[in-house]
Amino acid sequence: MATHLITGAGSGIGAAVAARLAARGDELWLLARDANRAAVLRKLYPGANTLIGDLAVPDRLSWALGQQTQPVRLDSLLHIAGVVDLGLVGDLGTKVWNRTLAVNLVAPAELTRLFLPTLRVTRGHVVFVNSGAGLTAHPEWGVYAASKFGLRALADSLRGEERGNGVRVTSVYPGRTATPMQEKVHAQEGKPYDAAAWIDPESVATAIVTALDLPRDATITDLTVRPGG
Image (cartoon, rainbow, N blue to C red):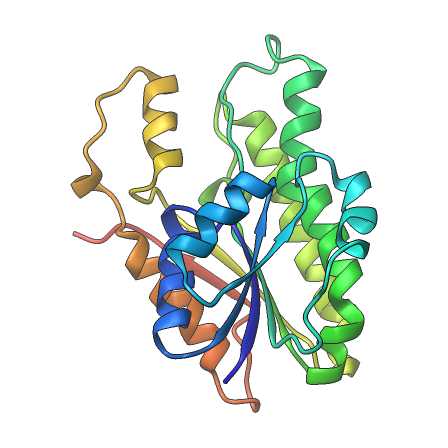
């Protein structure tokens, strides 16, 4: 039985991954932004442990986690939570930039820093769920793409730094996936939303679990998942 810490387990890709790992008997530690959200997650995943920490305020994560019981063993840290706000670079102010970078980039960096000692003991795995926007930036996607380009740099640097410690690092780049975030994106774009047109979160979960389960003689460093058809 492996132990996993997951952000974003409440919906979309994170929920699909958490359900998959729980179903096979793995131990889950789920990060929630507040006590109410933690209670919801415990109802969704009976037997799961929760930690409370707001990704939008990464400066407080170390203190918040220090007040709680943390996993003694950790086999993987799965960064799946994220936020997105579209808009022209000329229109978006610092509030949007700071929140997007905090949740999508700075908080994953800080969580990774905090749990690296535990991951080194198990020769564990860090998975960053990135985005196609982490590979190509399009108009009105500047702030989100910047956060995801940064996340790619974080993963690449971490991989080189931790190779000697046996810690594996994987970046997953899903295309448009049928999640609540995608529904929000369509609303911002002013387009009708059809979940059937996009990747099922279960398909991305399969890719992530495959990376986790790969034998120790190999690692998946970068994995791109695109809509089929």
